[in-house]
Amino acid sequence: MNKRFIVDSTCNNMRVDRWLRSKLGNIPQSLIEKTLRAGKIKINKKKAKSSFKIKTDDEIDLFNFEFQERIIQKKIKFEPTDEVIKSNEDLIIDNNENFVVLNKKSGISVQGGTKSKKNLIDIFSKSQIFHNSKPFTVHRLDKDTSGVFIIAKNRQTAQLLTTLFRLRKVHKTYLAICNGELEKNSGELIDELIRFEGKKKIVEKATTFFKVIDKNSKASLVEMKPITGRKHQLRKQLFNIGHSIYGDKKYKSYNSTIGLNKNLMLHSYKVRFIINKKKYTYKALLPDYFKKLLEIKRLDFSNLK
Image (cartoon, rainbow, N blue to C red; front, side, top):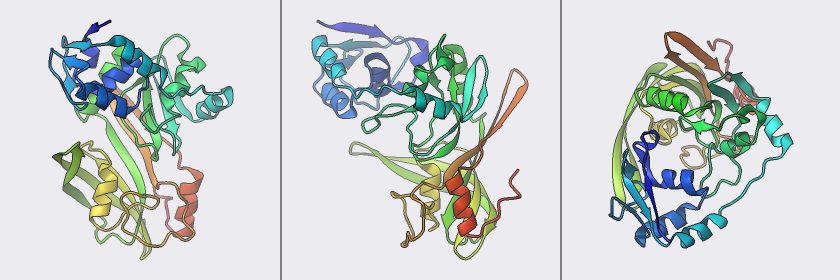
């Protein structure tokens, strides 16, 4: 049995692997790649890669649909307990009719992926907060990054917020504890960051404004305002200048880990945006482990605004 889908406007410019998960469930990335390579999924009658971005009114055909349904049965299931939901609801910064703002914990994914058994979307889809709606993601935050994260409650708000993020109308401020003493107290980091999609090399320009809140010979507390939104942008940029973020296992420019907490010391501290002339500003309190390292490294954060 075959099945055809027509892409609606809410999915315009979405990666096909993300679209497949939204329709078929949290299936492993490896199975998506294998199915696409085998031509069992075609877009406008052509084979495509998982990174292909679909457009409104594209035709997506799933061939041998029974095979796809068996894939769905293999997906990782996570049934959140009331205790888990409650622990996340305790971190709610704002809850209005259109969106929820969270102080996301480090170590929990935003949505499902190949290695993610527990994620915010699964948790909150079964929470009373979304009893008359469903959660929509509107931006990204790494699994190990804590802080401000927004979940839309309806499709219209999701489209609006996604557009604001894409047009850089949402102003984000991060805090990072990095090793060593930054030479400059403020400035602009401009890089050409490299990533790969399969064997394809992609170079992306990345720009971030930074300001040092406090520093010494051992460590620096840095405020970072990304202009672009590249994957692992802040982590890569600090690594490139030899001052990687403490707790970063992938981009690491320091040797000793004695006495260091294993958490990534990157926190989404503040988000600002405007909707219908109304200004919204949200701040997320620093995690205890973050404040503890600031104390250990003798970094003063009392001047944070």
